[in-house]
Length: 245
Image (tube, rainbow, N blue to C red; front, top):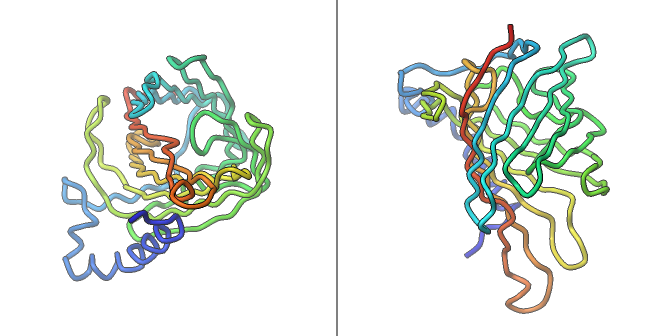
């Protein structure tokens, strides 16, 4: 039986609400990394030149793997500007992200390499990140890549601390579960629903691993109307982090 987006979101909320109680009963073990310490990620102090390089492993549709890079190009009173590039796909993509403060996004991506502008800042991270935190946000936005506009939903549950192995090394990280509903419903299909696992490591001021899954349901009658179509299957791993001077 397929679990609906609403059902998955309810389950996540219930799990997030029970997390502090379960952690207390188990002596907090589930909230600890392999090093035995709880990871609490404070708001990072970005520097011009900070650069993260990722490998994006495509898991379906024979899509080409890509190498993605994010680099801070300016930091000032109006916020942070980052340049994002993706190479290795059908075409190379370069776009700009604008963050009014660490964790907030006025311009950036939600699913792939699309560029979106948000009417109010999207809360990508709510610092300090610690197990048991959660937030739910509806935001009006414009998808500059597709030329469409609409409202998107993003629900985040910070689950626990974990030790994560990546090509760039091993990191103590905060694991988050992210559920999103996009604005791309049409007369023939329902909106895309995304379910991501994200590991954020304070040591590199950013994400070190993501597991991304997305799908949408086609409209129609009978059996065809219940079909779920994969829209995203990716594993993202940090290849390197180079701090700015």
